[in-house]
Image 1 (tube, rainbow, N blue to C red):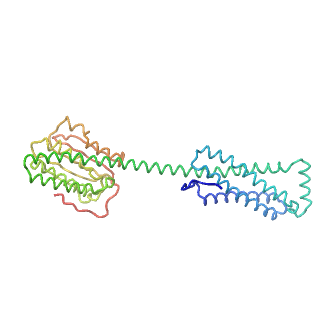
Image 2 (image 1 turned 45 degrees about the vertical axis):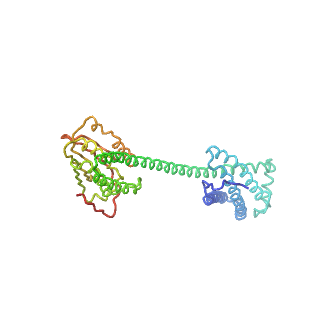
Image 3 (image 1 turned 90 degrees about the vertical axis):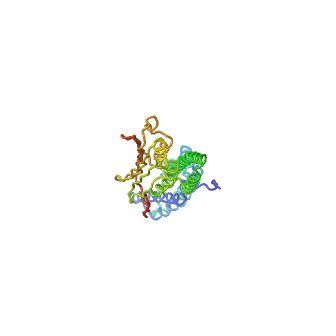
Length: 383
């Protein structure tokens, strides 16, 4: 008995295999029947009946041939083809033997209305020295190529399905790798921010600014509770992203109560657009780190968004003093993180552009495709 590995799904299922076998032998029967009709063979009814027996035998033998080929599923393509060429030999011999018996050994004379025709054919074969084995061999060669044709079709179908499985598996692995990269990049944001905030808290406590430290802790708690509750792989609405960044800015406002001014200008119809979570935080951190913290005067951090065709442009701009040694490069850890996340998420369809403004200040502009929008508009108070 043929045994297959438990849990192994065949490349070609039994239903498809059976349909292909029946189809091949039905085609064979139609061609041979047409040939006998064109050549006007006598006793075509009797011949057709015997031919159906041979076809039934051929279907059964080919079914076992299918079970034999299934043993070579997942093997190298060359091994499958070699197995087909070898396995087709006994199959062709068995069907050729059945064909010879039913047409040449089992009362061959009765196939013809004129029994003299049957005797004459037997005498001709005997006079020509054509043996039984030669007659069988001639038909077996023709059947061999017929069986090979079916086997190659079977292998081609199985190979195509295997290629599709490999492609789907590769796509799953690529998606898993992309998801892992996105998670890694997302989680790079929070520790960096936490480090800065804890330093600020330490300074406030040392200076005995307890109320300001308490406010910062409460805001920090709310910020982390909100940010960590979101799946790093899921997008959020622009409204949610801005709301989260307002929490961050509230924390920074405790550090720079007289120097940090926030201005958010986003049209209501853009607030439902989906964006990667925490994509703006590194840009705002950059503006505060190099714009606000290094200035002795008030610095305005502006967050703007507008839609151009099917693209969303989000900018974070500050009017702080210009420091060419740091800001001109635009290659800090936070900015590099944003670029990597955009590239992983959107490829060439998204970008981050950073530049120094003429009258002091710095701007970072994210451009990304608008892929979908939330059905329900969310309201956000930007004041």
